Amino acid sequence: MEDNKYEYTPEEGYDNDYKYEDDEQQEAVRKSLRGYRVVIVLLAVILAGVSLLYFNLNRQQQHDYELLKIDRDSIQSNLSTLITEYDNLKFSNDTIASQLEKANAMMEQLKRERRWNYAKIKEYQKEVGTLRAVMKSYLKQIDSLNTLNKRLVRENVSYRKEISTANLRADMAEERATELQGKVKQGAVLNARNISIAALNSNDKLISRVKNAATLRVDFTVAANALAATGNIKIYMRITAPDGYLLSTESMPSFKYHGENLGYSASREIDYQNEDIDVSIFYKGSGFTPGTYKVELYANGNLIGSNEVPMR
Image (tube, rainbow, N blue to C red; front, side, top):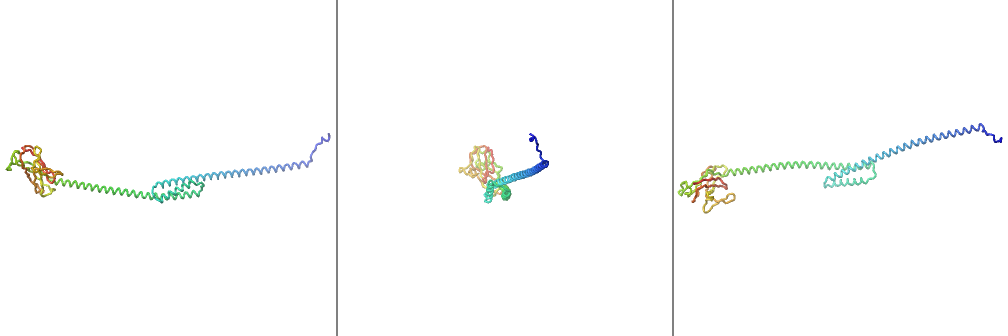
């Protein structure tokens, strides 16, 4: 029992050594923890930097892709516009047709393109620029042709107006000449005035009663007319009795007047020299009745005078 009560107490030197070794281990652990912490912090910083770099690169790539997509869409739009413009030219021109075919082929190639980069974008932009330059050249030529055509149209219209004006003037001159000619012709018609009828008996003496007459003498004056033709002129006389019948001979002579044959009572040829000339034409007959007699005188196809004369 006494032996069990004995307590073991380590020596003083052994206890100090144990404590010393334990402190060293704790210090080493602390140093290791600090190293781990530093490594972790460094790794965290590196990871954050890598993440930020990856994010920036990814965003830059996305931005570049969007730019490339915009450029691609722009090229497609320009090509589509060019194709429409080439197609709208509507010219049967081999060069224009080849440019249109080239633009269509480029459009199809552009639609099939899957890998895009700046080099391809620049190449397509250069091709589109070349087609655009060719298009501008054609449009400039067409504009010049349109300008020339408009000028020619204006000149043609001007010439037509001049020709129309000249024709109008010629027509007016011709019409005026025709009018003047008509007036001259009308002015050249002889005029018989002071037409009267006298009743004569068988001895050619004037009598007052027409029923006793053997001859009717028609007196008149052919007026002077400087425009009328001179020379021998035949005058035809028509006497219409009160009953409306033409006084004529058994042979019923006639003359042409406006394309018709007109019967006449008597005629006479005179020598006309553009001066007043008194003329008498005689009609021999019988059975005259009182009333109004109508006298008409014709010469050169014209009616030169007429009068209605009452006879007792």
